[in-house]
Length: 107
Image (cartoon, rainbow, N blue to C red):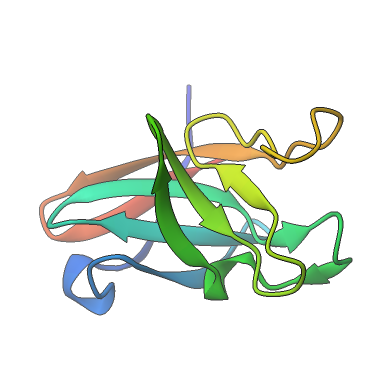
């Protein structure tokens, strides 16, 4: 059983950008790709050592939808959190859904 937490309205997320939400004490970066495709990952950049991923740029690299860290530009795959530049680095990925117009995250 999951505890879904409403974090914002879909209209609060500009397409192809992210925002940070505090969910159960964790910083979560939520991204909207296009009109309604949503992703949720940990906001902490393990290489840069700061909570900044929600300010990163979305990019499509081949078949991978990624966020580029605003610090050192590593790309993290939004589907599984894998860093494309370092196979030993991964960020957490969370479930996200749209319920009506509300974006919800489950840890």
